Structure formats: structure tokens, C-alpha cells
Image (cartoon, rainbow, N blue to C red; front, side):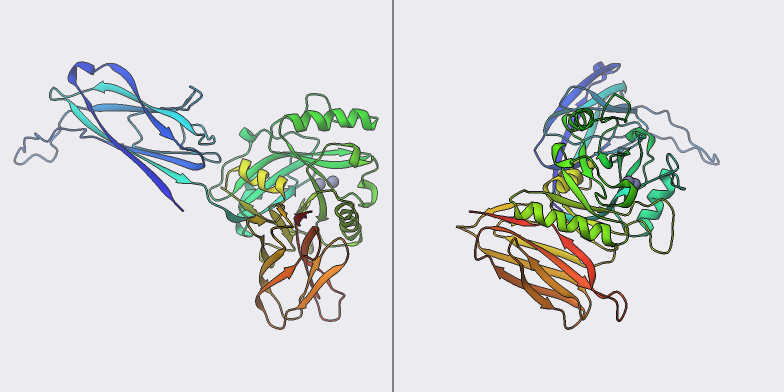
Length: 438
Ligand SMILES: [Zn+2]
Ligand SMILES: [Zn+2]
């Protein structure tokens, strides 16, 4: 990961004691985290050693306080002189500072000259800006806690998800909004607030905001439902239509009349209702629609077939911050795999990755790299016309191949696996498509 470092020295004169001032610095686009450290001589080195004395106390002669202001003019935090290192990112900030995106613009260091020695003090500031870069993150987009009918607290879920190898987790309780502030921070895992709109006519996840709508959840017509969905969309929630063919909780409203971002085609263990959802998705793609898919475990408690990350979303995100993860899901820069340690995929056509559109006149070659395959895995390239190419893995490990698009449309990849000898092949991985525009 690339970093930009800004260093500056500040000389504070004794006459400035008791005053506050700010020092501006510029943050460019595309920064994931900001770390600020500062140092200065707190105690002057004129200690008089007293023979026989254990302690030699010298008064603190310099005290310089710290705070930070964002480009919007708001205070990000203030820490007196206690902390000499602070970190700010979207998913975490040093206590006393608010977690927030490190947006581009003019930030300011707050300098509090609380106490200054007669000779003045020189303070060295160092600001390290970590740049965003595309990385693969794994997560689960559909999980229940004790706030509805799950059995675990948020913290337990976060720790379990981390132990399962996940990087992010969306908590989606039934008709219960979970403000981000109510979700504890667990290092190494990005928690995404959400709600599963759970309705007799269908279920949908609203991810990434504290309150997607102001009214109660229930509606009695598709028009009323549309008003909830539209409000959530305007507030930038990511909306997924959940398990559209699942028994009593299938989607009865025509969800194509509702605004949504993604279709959850893989809910918990692979089964008939999921395969139907994949079939519907394929029809939608073939009719020219562009629909990104998601998968989520719908985890409530551990059972033999249900676990956090079953299935797992593999997401190519620019940072581990929630907004970059949701943006990648929205764009379909993602794939679904049956478990956190399931196979993974990279797909490219020119500059495009999964979910992107490329110009077919200029770019006809789809390049695919699969990892974590097992011998016997069947790899399909699926287009509007057909299962356009089939490979069978002869050994475990990686497979690299290229596929030539003979006409515009879309191409996506599925990996099928016999999970036990003699069992039929079931999806082990499903990618979002790359779209080849005519
Ligand atoms: Zn549901
Ligand atoms: Zn659910």
C-alpha cells in the first residue's frame, strides 16, 4: 500500500502560551486513513541530579495540545496533550476522535499552546496518509443478531466472523434499525449497519445507513413499498432483494417495480430456491438488464449447514471502509463463494473487472484467474446464449484462461463442484458479469 507523508515543524514562541491556532494541510483524493503523530520536548533537560535521591522531579515545561478539523470545518476530535498518535479512518478512529472518511480537502491541526518554556518550543508533526488500493475482502451481507431472532450479540458476531476469516459483516435484523453507533468496533472487521425489511410480500436488505425510512416498515401495496424503497435509495442505502423464491418468505410484489441495487441469489446453503433465483437472474441479464448479485448466510445460529460466511461475498473494494465495500457490491465488483475458504476469482476485460462494462469493439477477450479449485471442479463461462465454455480442473489449485466474446453481451463464470462423491454438481462460486457493450 502506498503512503504519502507530510512533515512540518512548528516553533511556538513563549508569547503564544495560552492561545490556540490551526495549521492547515491538504489531503488529496483516494485516502483511506490518516495517522498523525507529534513530538516536542516536554521536559527541559536541566535536571539537577541529587546524589542519593531516587527521584528527580522536573516540572513539565512544555504542553502542546492536539485536535483535528475536517475540510467541512467540523472538529474530528481533540485529545489535549495525552495522545501523541491518532488515527482516523472510516471504520475506526482513536478514542476521542470520530471515525469518518478521510475526504479530500484542507484539514487543520488544532494546536493548543497550553504551556511554553521561556525559550519557546519546536513541535514536529508527521501525517501519514494511506492511499486506497483495490483489494479482495470477504464478508457476509445477511446476518441476524439478538436484536431480532438471532442468538448472538453484535460483538459475538464480529468475533465469530473474524474467526471465520471474514473482513466485513452486515447485520440485518428483521425490521429493526441498527444505528452504526450501536455496533461495537472490533479490529479487523468492518461492521455494516442494516435492516432486513421483512414483509409478508417479500424481504429486502437496506444496508449502510442508520435509518432508511422514517415510517413504520409495513406497507399494504406495492406503491407504499416503493415509497419506503425510494426513500432508502435517496438516503444511499444499498438495497438487496432477498431470497426471492424462498417458501413463505418469497417476494410476492413484482420487485422490478421497486428500486433496488442487488439480487440475493444465494441465501444460506445452496438449494432449489437459490437455483431458481439464479435462473431468474440469468433471464434478466439475457434480456439486457444489468443486475448485480449478492449472497448472504442469513445466519441466526450455528447449525450443521449454516455458518457465518456460508456463502461468502468476495468483494474487490478500494478500502476496508464501509462505503467502499458497499460501492463495490453496488457495482458488482464481487463474486459469491460457498465458504470463506472457497475458490476465488479475478476477471478482467481490458481495464474492466467484474461488474464493469467494456466496449466490445475494442475489447473482446475475457481473462479469468481462479484459485482454490479442486480436481473435478467444472468451470463455466455463461453468456446470454449458452454455457459458452467449459473447463474441468484436473488438479487442485489455479486455473488461468481467456475466453473470446464473439458478440456483445455479458459473460460470467460459475464453478460447479461435487461436494461429496456421487452428489450432483452444485455451485461453489458464482461471479458477477462483465458487460460487453455493442
Ligand atoms: Zn429473509
Ligand atoms: Zn434474514
